[in-house]
Length: 308
Image 1 (tube, rainbow, N blue to C red):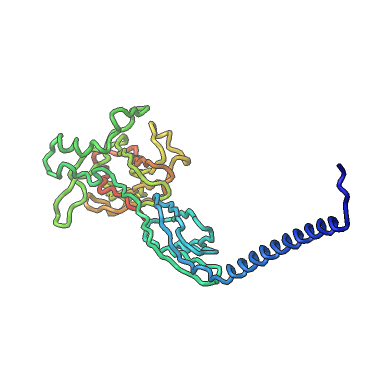
Image 2: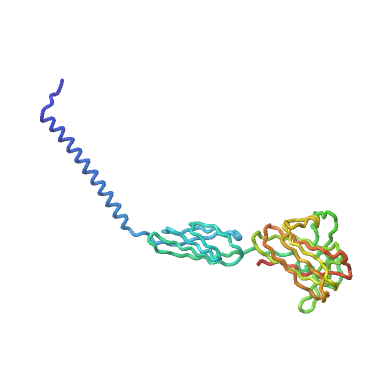
């Protein structure tokens, strides 16, 4: 059966679609209006003020700064040293030397206001030291007691497992002619009384740290002109012969030279500075006087190392 379309049915259909379209248009208008009002009302809310905060994790010279600030749009770090600082949110900074550093983080918020936080960072380098650097570990009795002298020599001899290629090395002879104390008491030292005498000791240092090694020395002979008596080297690695001492594995060296007013009691200070590149340092000292003997000795005492 075919339904006959009349003027009335046409108008009803048109009215239905017209009302539906208007209703949809109205709903969309309401939604757009509500959305735009919501956006406008949100933009009126004030931005949170910035609050600076951070923590630090120290690994010898390297410090990792962890930012815990809120409400920040930009960052400015001052590390308390001579560096240019940083504008990164989190940053790793390396200090050049030990010390106390006041680190400041300044943050700026979206509204242009700022906030600061300051913490103190301590850069502490573990101390290095020579074992029995005074040679007095077992006392400094004047009696020639082999056990006392051997105890003092032990730290300055080659380790038992260390083979010296040509056997041309012996620890300096222990002597009670070390540097006297303020009250005049004699102390121990080591003497180089022949060309084979020396001293050998490895110690632990921190790469990147700057150190000063010093020792006291006196010579017995008065030579004109002056001659080299003993040389001390600071080496980056182990050696098994003097021929292995090269410019590449040497931090620095210093030589004790005979002098006009030489005498047992007339000790002089010799120093060497270096910045560690390795975790282990070899202090090696040896007579360089081919004519060294019991009448032309050199005495060494008070070997120290300090952080600069």
